[in-house]
Amino acid sequence: MYAWIDNIILGIKDNDNYTNVYELYDYLEIEIVKLMPTNILLRGNDSFYYRDLNDKEIVFIRNDLNDTMEKFILLHELAHALLHTHIYEAAFNKNFINKDKIEKQANYFAFKMLNINLDKIELEGMTIEQISTYIGIPYNLLSNLLT
Image (cartoon, rainbow, N blue to C red; front, side, top):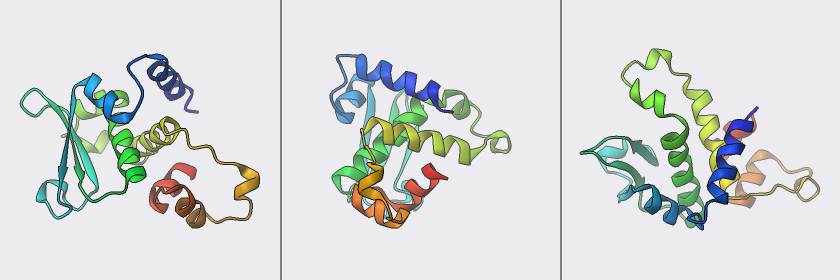
């Protein structure tokens, strides 16, 4: 279903410039701006990606996230930057955007880029809530990815 995303991930990981999410952002010249969670720009969200602010690509992200969550969110926003260029060009006509679909794609990309391997035997009998706590990814993001 997401083989095309897997191919993009393989291309990124085959590139010598990829060692972590922060170096990838530097390489792609996408700026990361950390904001207080109450900042009005975040509109109550953890982050958002802006394609063209004074000819720059920027991700605004909360400054109070733990390391795993921050990396996951940065990779999620990077997915929008790399996978959904056509959507952001048509962002003002939201009637034609399947938001659930693009969010699942972005979550899938982030999950795969973090190399989180779920051992079925180790996780057997766990609920999605327990798995989300175990791997450090919030329930709503993991649930969105698995449903």
